[in-house]
Length: 240
Ligand code: PGA
Picture 1 (cartoon, helix red, strand yellow):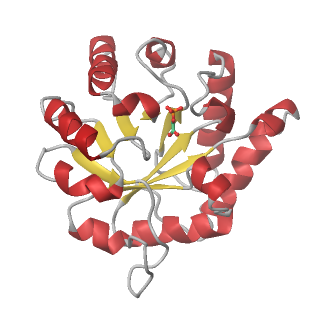
Picture 2 (cartoon, helix red, strand yellow):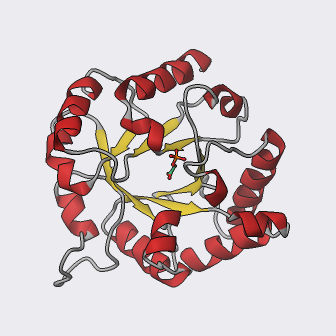
Picture 3 (cartoon, helix red, strand yellow):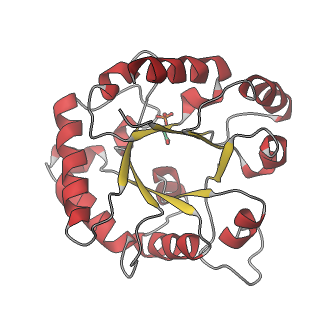
């Protein structure tokens, strides 16, 4: 089995003391598929750990003055190779539209970063059985004008599964991942990887590992606990 990608979206969970302890613990973890996305403020603590790094957000330009933002070119110049774009918390609280997300995808790829584009339906979409059309619309708009998709990864995160302890059934997951992969195949030959995210932890990861179309995981809450993350990785390793 190909090595699964594991991305830790650490969000805004830790304070200064906690992050120092976390870095000491996580340094001992060796897994080449791991990418951590800490709060940007804490990035320097992670820089020489050998762990691949990503930012949780980028701005949509690569030059200029945009107070408070992080340009993809700036992140890249520090050796940070990945960027999360379009996370549902940013769509919700910062009103990021698919059009803004499209500009961020383009700017990230232009800076030669690996862009992890988050998409997913909310509960209302799911109940109305509109998941497939929502996923396709998000992909279509976010990828408009993007020609080279080889540095793109999709993270499928149903909004209702994030931080809720709820997860899709295997059948739903298989169907939705297939919908994403099939749709992407209509405009590129590149084999774009698709991750699953939403309440993944050490107690449920085995269910997802048995679905071979899932290329990896975007892990939020659980990635902030070093011993939990180690457990998850050791389960993944034992599965391969
Ligand atoms: P969760 O978050 O694992 O805490 O559900 C996932 C995410 O928001 O990326």
